[in-house]
Length: 50
Image 1 (cartoon, rainbow, N blue to C red):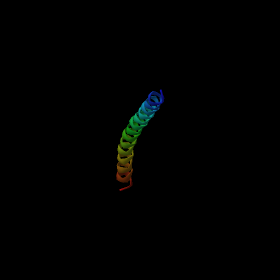
Image 2 (cartoon, one colour):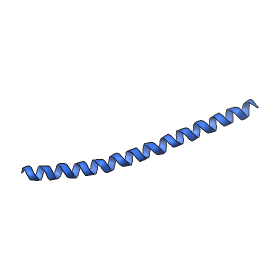
Image 3 (cartoon, helix red, strand yellow):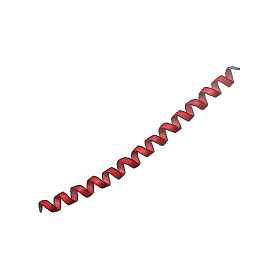
Image 4 (tube, one colour):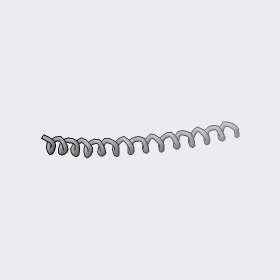
């Protein structure tokens, strides 16, 4: 009975960690896309100032 409870907790912990990992990947993708937009804006601003 104790082993089953420990297995259940381990499974829940794994699922939580997996969900956090997937959210972190989504955040990284979003930030990369944001960086591309910001870089493009900076390039345009520099061209206007030249």
